[in-house]
Image (cartoon, rainbow, N blue to C red; front, side):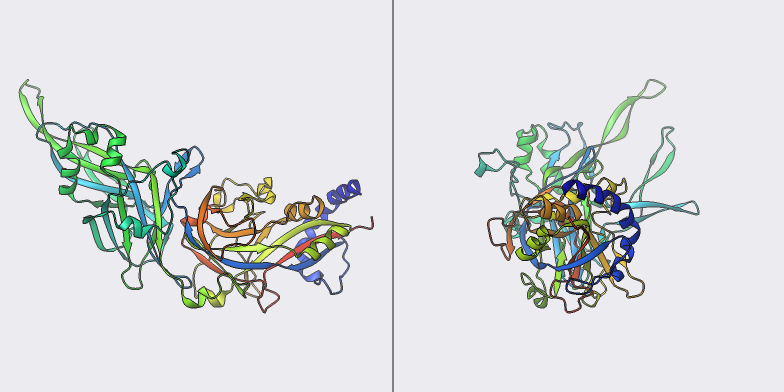
Length: 524
């Protein structure tokens, strides 16, 4: 029979490709009359058990692998989501000296200290003019931004694990870090709003002529010069600047703190690991040189010392969900809530034991199996919808077998893995928008290969190609059984977007979350 199934799968798959688009109208659900069709492909719909889990504490000091490079992505700002309420994201970062034991020329004067954090942006040239469109910025209002020194030591290795494992820091530790902040601000802006304007530099070219150059938009501001004079320049020749380990202990970090201004705000995704991200101390001094006549003259020279952000950077989140939303956490309710950041995930439990055993006993060939998530637009309050969803195995903290479909891969991150996880699709006649997650091979393995029917987690993702997981320290509710919620995809923690889907108890059966299984029956 297995050989027969294998042959039949090959012969039916070509027909299925052309006919699946009309299957929704051709077949009824279980318990109804099954309408015959030329391909013999039939449809069954199964209810699933789905509920929302609130992530109270999730690890955030992780970096992301991106090809040959590493990105240290963190959110900063205040975001007012129409559904999930107001959330604040702060950043605590290590800092490292660009050069240990720096030496400054005699008489050097610190002129300015500049922080540079580039935005994600796209260059657009119109009519010969270069402009930029900012990306990964959520909201359009302002927030209070301040930067202060932190005296909390961020360990790279966990002392409770005999320094054999990386130290984990979590999204709910802001109150702990606050206790170690110095009193004075290094920088403060009462109403910070990111600007799409490019950065202009006025200098000289190689011929000594005045020259203007530009770089992409960035959070580029002046920091407190007196602070860095005392912290760095006055420490020339000291033990504190003599090695990186000494410097980490001396200058333990910077806290980027966001505070709301009423109901406005914006939240920005930064990559703190970029080569042009960091702080520069610009200083000037008199440099003696010889002119063409052999005379010694003094000219003003300018140089700089760089301070980069360290590898250990923590995102913290603060905010409360509206009361009506909290009532849906953990329940098998009419709606399923997903949010990034510290956020919310959905837990999906496929099949009851009876349905799965019935499928195993029948002679069926599964052609396709989908989970379909319909957006509840009435509850979205005009919020933008996320670009992608990601489904994973909660029990084993791993990808599903369907994720690896070769046809899902793409050089374009937005369109990658669309066979596994579709882009949002809107029905022009009904106006309903849905996401389709295909789990065909996963269902086949449950039926034919005796694979364990694990819990599945569904999250919003900002990059479906990113597979790193981060630890969950606390969630509500805690999952029962031996397989607790231990990990979530790291890519879900770097977006503040949220979405509301019709859940497994939705009153409208057409939009209710369900598993749709297309199959071919055999007589063997």
